[in-house]
Image (cartoon, rainbow, N blue to C red; front, side, top):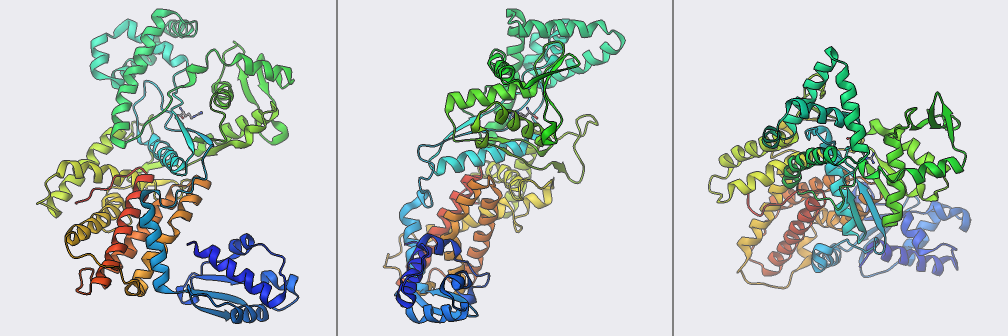
Length: 570
Ligand code: ARG
C-alpha cells in the first residue's frame, strides 16, 4: 500500500463529496502532499491554500470541510490546523504495511522498473595511462560506481566506460625514454612507477638536449600512424597501467563494460570534423580550426591544432557520437571533476550546434576536490596520495580497531578489508558531490560517527539480533507493539527508502543514499536502546524482529548501492 496515494485518493473523494468537483487530479494532490518536519503534525500534510482560488474558499474552511468528510481505516486521525490538513496514519497499520511490503519484496524493495528499456552510459574513473591511481580519481570512480548500481537497480541497461587517457605526445616521449634507458624486466616488475621514472628522466635530459623532444614526437607520430613497433610498446605500457589499476578496482569492487579511451577514437574523428565543416562551424584561427562559442560566453572550442593534431574535445565529440550510435543511450553521464566544467559546457554546446538534439541527454556529473588531512594534493610538489596505499592503510587501521573491539572474531582479515575500504568509500560519498572534501582518518574510521564503520556495525548488530532469535518460537507479529515513536521513526525511514533512491538517481547524487543509511542506523540504534527485542510476548517479539530484519535488509541494500560491503559479524 502506498500511503501517499491512498491519502491523495481520500482527499480527492472528500473534495468531490464536499464541493461537488474540484478539478484537480489525484497525482497533483499527491505531489502537493508534504511530510511535516515534526511527526506531532502528522505523517502527511496537505496545504489547502492550493485549492482556495479554484474553490473560492479560505484554506481554513476547506481544511475543516475535508477533515469532516474523511474517514478511512488506515487513518488514525485527520486534523485541520491553520489551513493545513494533517494526516495521522494508524501506527499499527502503518508499520504492518511498510514492513510487509519491504520484507516481501526483499532486495527488490523500491525497484519500480522505471528504467526498463532505457540505456544509460556512464563515463567514470577514466584514468590516465602511465600515471598512478591517486586519490584524485577516487570520487569519479566511486560516484560512477554508485550511479551504475543505482541505475541497474531501477532496471536501466547501464554501460560503464573507462575513457582512458591514452593519447598524447607524452607517450611518444615515454617510448623514446624506454628505448634509450629502459628495459623490459624493470618496467614489468616496477609497473607504472618505472614508467614515470623514465618520463621524468626524459624531461630532465631534454632540457639539456632538446633534440630528444624531436625523438619523442617522432615516436608519437609512429603511434598515430599505427607503426607496429611503436604500438607494441605503447600497448604494453597500457596493459601494465591497467594491471596496476585493476588491483585497485578489485579492492573497490568496481568493474567496467568498456575501456574505450581517447586513442580508440583515432580513426573516428574525421566524420565529426566533416559535419563541423558542412555546418560551417569550423573557423580558422592562426592556422588552427576552432568553433566560435563567443555567443554563449565561452572561449572557442579548439578542434584541430595548426599541425593538424586533434584535441581532447575532438576526441570527446567523436566519443559522444560513437556512444549514441553504439548504445543509443537515453542518458549519458560524465562523472568528472568540476574543473572540467567549461570543457563539458563547450562539448555539449558543440553537439547542439552540430544538430544532435540528444545533447540534452548528456550531463556532466561534477564533483569537488579531495584534500588529505588538511593538505591540498599536488603531483608537482610531490604531495600525492596513491589509492592503493590509502586502501591498504585503511585495511590495516581497521584491522587494529577490530583486534581491539572484537578479539574473538574468526574472519578478521576479511572484515578488516570490508571495513577499511568501506570507510574510505563511505567518507568519499558522504557529502554532496559538488563539495570539496578533506579526507581524515579519524573521521573516516570513527565507529561512533556518521561513518561507514558505524553503519556496517549497526547492520552487523541487526544480524546478530536475528541470529540469536533464530530457533525461538515464531508467532504472528503484533504490529501495535510498533506504535512507539522509536519504532515509528524506523518504519518511516524504511518507507522513504524507495523515494530516496529515486531522487539519488534523478539528481545523480549517491550522497543521498549515504546520508539515509546513517539516519536509518541512528534510528535503529535508538529503537534498540529503548525497546527490548527478545521479550516474552511472542507477538511483540515477532513484530520487533520483523522490524530488525527490514532494517538489516535496507542497510545492506543502501550500502551495496554506494559500493560498500556489509559484513554480518564485526
Ligand atoms: N582522463 C581524464 C582525467 O583524468 C578524465 C576523462 C573524463 N572523460 C571524458 N570523456 N572526458 O582528467
